[in-house]
Image (tube, rainbow, N blue to C red; front, side, top):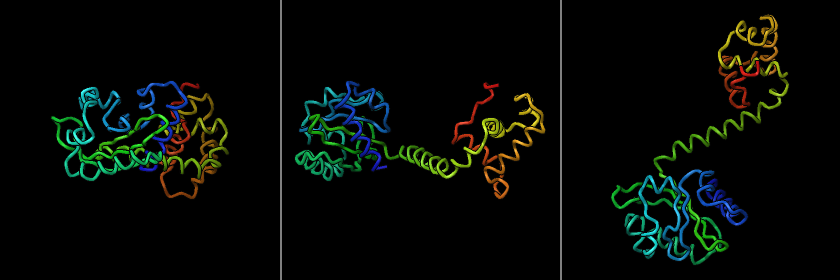
Length: 237
């Protein structure tokens, strides 16, 4: 996750340098709350709409704060003691290397403190600090989504050559099987005989290696249909 966030910041920097897209359009493409900070004083100059509405942050009012007073307003003293020197050092170095840290902070002075994970990129090319922050308690859903994506990618890579052996008709049948339809139902939808569907089904099992699997066929049908995008095929017929 850390590596992904660091790469995302470098991508955001390149997008900002090459395109005229506004911050909000860019932020909607990435996970976490995107924010733009002043290079020297570290206060927010822009915070994405989701965060402003959720935490009632006033970026304009914060622009008059020093790094120390800005930190004291939002960051717990214990976290401030460790993160402020880290940020000031990164600001002085200006080497374009992302810096990440956990901090115990509140997004609004009237709210409780929560753990956030923040990654900053000090961009001398933009003369801005680009940041992505996540509530740690919400990381689980992001992690699960990324873990699912990785597993689906591995499944697709490992089973691609099995899938491409299927004819177009067999792929349609596989999609219907994943939806729980019977041979008779599929035969009526495709306007063929149930015997033809049984033949397709046997050939699908052979191509996907289901004859030697102990797992229930339905599990495999659903996995192939989801990863290879076979859902909602009824509209073809």
